[in-house]
Length: 70
Image (cartoon, one colour):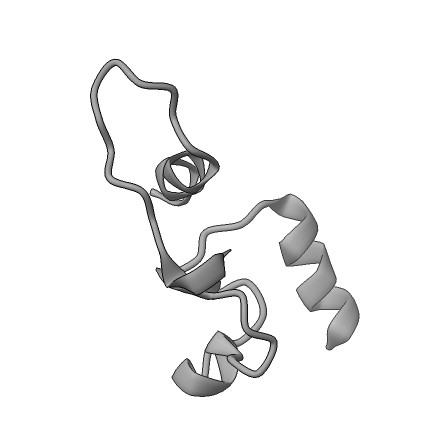
């Protein structure tokens, strides 16, 4: 069963949702949502903060992560 799952993971990813949360190690999004491996894309930031997007400014790593997830 694990070998089959790892084979699917190696082929690529297509998570069902993006979960934005703080970097607190006590917060485990997959436990909160019941998501299995490969079902949830996570963005963890200090203070659960995502900077406001402003056109013409350099993109933040958070913005890049959100764009990648979508």
